[in-house]
Length: 91
Length: 82
Length: 269
Image 1 (cartoon, each protein chain N blue to C red):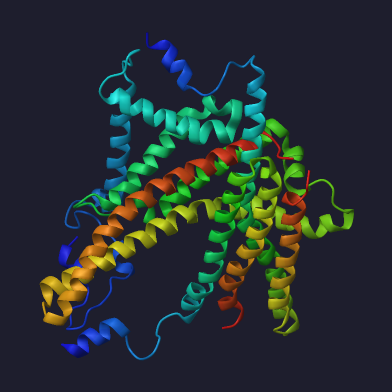
Image 2 (image 1 turned 90 degrees about the vertical axis):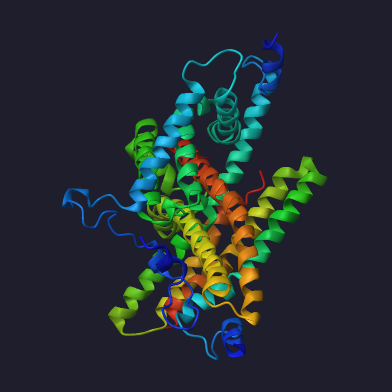
């Protein structure tokens, strides 16, 4: 008596069903979007950290003070380029 | 009594503490509003035209990246400009 | 562990907002034997939260019947929530295999966070960064292990550092960004998200509660009473809001853990 209601509740059909692959495709797309949205801030932060850090080290070595902000901006631009390349393709 | 209330409401007449944190708090307002608008309008667009979901999601991500970059610039400015 | 110290930190006539000192907890029994000094309020709450999670799962799933009754109803709703919202969307066909880990992670963190609004305890343990860091490192080590096991040592780092389709010279410039982002900032942001939300939420609650206590109990004046009432109302509103945020952060932490496990199992294209 309980069985039919329960199997109806699970929205996933049998593995043999063709709708399973459709569900898999939707899941994969959703997963890609979620992964991208969560990893964008860390890409931008790491771009700024790598090239800002490089600029900071060069500043200490050469005794200048302009390379740190320039490095941060360059890293920001590179990280944005990477993000656009990874997630911005129209497939 | 009155002076105490004014003190609580207005703090003192100058900002003390870490100015960098205050600056980041101010700098996060704009990107916060921006990210909210991007995802809100994106969800609305997907609800209106589900067949364009992929294109809308990509553009959401790109807009989000640009807006987030502003917030993170605000995060590093206190380190650069001491 | 004195309550007045927590509620009104200022000793003078002026109101002082609670600061970082509300996160510093010494040994629970400072006069007790020295082998008991590890027992602080946070460790006590962690043990309590773990115990609650164990009892919850035990009551729900020990001797499960076909027609659920009592705690098993709650347990099945909780299980379905984690499975359909976290495991299956993020891990796909591998989702059900990872359910034991995801379910226990979600509920352990959820109970630890909710301790922040339980009267008398009032401390979300994750507002100490040590606890989220340990969870994040556990997930991180698992991700590295799975990645090296399923994609090979070289293949894993190649998939991580070199996204296909870029001109060759750019790889030299972009690979460090990828490496730092995936290997160092991932566990960092993973733990800091949970930590910062719990930290700020606890500070906010303590601030409004101490405003209410100071203006309504310690220094009751006609003008100050209005501020005190605002603080009192905001304490109640913020407690409800914190309940929601604490559940949301536990959910997001589990979601990201599932996402990182998935990134170890399969290379993203």
